[in-house]
Length: 534
Image (cartoon, rainbow, N blue to C red; front, side, top):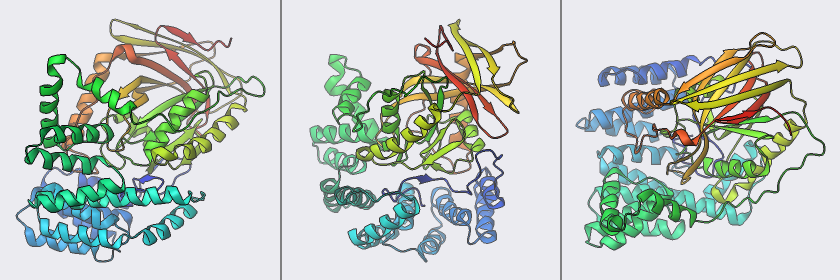
């Protein structure tokens, strides 16, 4: 799937083979070659290496990604090589169907992002807008849902999904018209997008047009809407903050508070869960891990599903770890620990849910369809809760002098091989408005430590120096901007490296490295002890 454009899709795909949960993920040679090429620092060397990957693996998904990366490097690093850029764009869309707009929109987006070959971008974008009919969309949707073995949504929801996808296409075309200086066509295109399904991209463009025409109040209104439901372009973000300061600065209203209020005004979570009451008491606390991305459209419904699941189950029944990953776009809440965790499970798409290390569920939804992933994951959680725990686990966490200290006392109930004690430091809630419009992010993993299972009767101690964790997050994000194996040089709109020590918690769990099964888990507030059932 290209840049996760097909917004009716259930998963934002990274790409790769599916591996068993208990297997160590060994990357296939085409993926290894693409990663190595992307990490080369010198642009011409990277370009040559990417072309070799494309030639060596012509039918592989990584060969296709290498061809797209060639266009990206040419457009960003060699903008004067017009003939090469046009030739690569033509190569990419040669076998693509404009009615399945992923490739056309991807190529047009690369060109407009770099500000090169805008007429080529306009022609491609306009062609796929014309070809992407509701009939073509419905054919593809039926195929996708059948492949995922899920029921097709109701006709009304499918209509909304189509309009949302068409809005994204129109947003790209509007951006191209704006870059070409055709403000009239840009306004008409963004306006059509807004009438179909309001989007941050169209609102951003309409705000830019309003400012250029001297209508600052309209620009501020459009940009506030865009900022709450997505990400503004860097130029728009600067102007929006200037307009905000002029309007609210004298009153001392923090921008974050204004955005919080505007976000909450969008409406409540569409899922209204009932509190879970087990048929009989159990001894297991289930671990739910979710791999999500702030720029992943179907992760929006999955994120809201997790919010609802945390309402249904107490922290003694289910504990949650949210692993942010760079799928399909860079995510400033991702870090080395979350990426390593995704490699452990061989995660190839977001959202992906892992229950107690072994039950895997993929597939998300729009905000309105959050009940779909909620119901699927709820079933897994309730089944896991009915299973006896494989261990007892007592943990205590304290925070003093900027250091979180965790003491873990595990006790196995049955023989098990290769057991690790894993301790995750989480922030209970982070604010960040990503491309998928989710603003509040719970139980975000900031660091992860592991120790071998101690001898019976012994304890394990783990320390997290909060300042050091924050510094490592900053270093990771800084380094990712310079060198990464997926996107090339880039810039985060905001780096979520700072840590609020008052907002921290700890998740402790015992996991087998033999089959990935989690035997027991606990959530521990700093300054509290967990493990004793009332």
